[in-house]
Length: 232
Image (cartoon, rainbow, N blue to C red; front, side):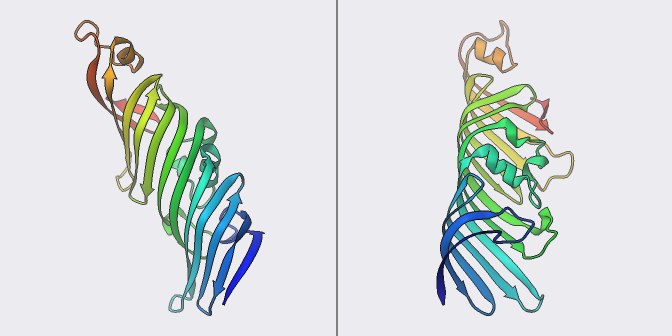
């Protein structure tokens, strides 16, 4: 049987963020619970197109949850939510959510066992995010990002960011790769490309002096670790 409902409660467990002002429908059987979410919010983040399912594994005497949703709102607030247990994603990159400006829309899929004390290893996830007006000071080394229009994709194996952004005020194309499967020290690999003149190269810290003057198509490959530039 399907029930139409509204609620304001923690849908998953006390380890996960609360969903408020939710509305949707619920279907329950002896071994499953299915929720179709029309709308809701976590703080000021709007949640739509949600689907939450719990299925009982009788052999393991454990319920497993699958969650899909679209989240829209302030990027810093989303990162703050993702910095709660059991995710702690921003902490993995030494990233303070309060330093990030801009808005974003994310489509995500998450799967986890229904129990308290979840760890990051318990959570399977995949997400794609469109970022708008993104800004971050000291993103890597002395490089400040602003006016970013980017696409971010992440799963348990790694993270990819591509798009256009101003780096120290210089518009550029950026590709950023994180490999979560690599052993320590984990390095961020960043490619910056564009047509840069003398002033732009100097702003990026790659002045060529008299060896090269005037605009030129340029690609710069960087590596960073813990927010610090390693080499270029």
